[in-house]
Image (cartoon, rainbow, N blue to C red; front, side):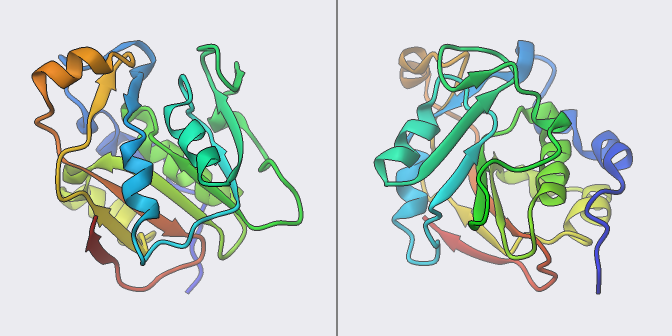
Length: 205
C-alpha cells in the first residue's frame, strides 16, 4: 500500500494542531525546551537504533542537539527563531530538502506543539523510504478519532517509547522554575519510519 506523504496537511492540522496544548499554556513560537534526559532514555533503549546523521529542526537553545552530539551523532541544528544556537531563521515547514547527502538521515525534535502535525507530515515528505522521524509529543496525542483517521491510521508510527517517569519540558527554557513546580504532563517519543505501514509497537523507557 502506498501512502501520500504530502497530502492532507490542512485537514490534519485542523483536527490535531492546538489540541496538544491549551491556550493558557501557549507561548509565542511554542518554545518549550526539552530536558536532555529525554535523549539519554531514548538512546539507552535496546529497541532504538542510534542514528548517525540527525536534523534537529526546532533546536531552540540546543538542549537536545547538544546531547545528540554527545552521543556521537552528526547534528544539523536549525530553528525558526535565533536563540543563539544552530542556524536561526530556518522555517522547517518551508524546507524542500534534507541536510546531509548520500547517507541515512533522521529527524529528531520536540516540535512546536501547535504545529506538531504539520512537522510530522512534512518530515515524512522530506525523508526517503526507511529513514526515520522521531518526535517528542504528549502521550495524549494518541487520543482522538479524527486524529486516528487523519494521522495514525494512514501513517502509523513504528514505535512509541513511553517514559516511565515524567520528563521536564520547560516553558521558554526555564528549567530552574520547572524543577520547583514539577511536571504534570506525560510525554513519549514517537518514531516514524518512512514507508512503514505495520502495527505500532510500544516500549517503556
